Length: 128
Image 1 (tube, one colour):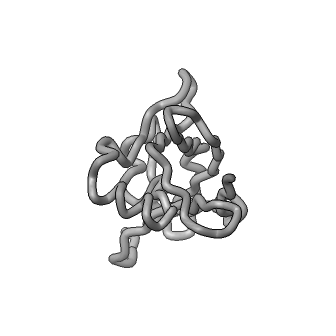
Image 2 (image 1 turned 90 degrees about the vertical axis):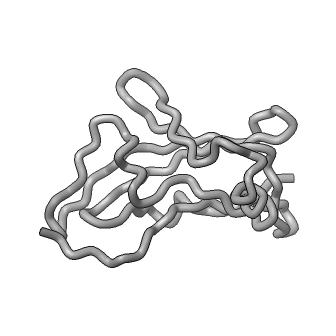
């Protein structure tokens, strides 16, 4: 048995203009690489929702988080407190005016409680 904290962690990526102001994307998609191709693991299904509107205002978009590993194909959660596993490479894609603006690959890991990734994978995306 592993005792975890009661917090729910989310991995988010900032998207901003070169001047540092938030960049309002029209939509985002999130995929994970599998043996048979990309699997859609989007957090947002409704880009008119208040949650997505808040992301647009802040320029911070959630990519994945605790509890979402159940959607990843063939993934088995670690059972020991000191075990770390690679969940996979998550691909975060941002769109504006029906055009793909960027693709960001993020290696996602998990221990028995929470997901995390390397800080370099979470660097803010600067757009014109």
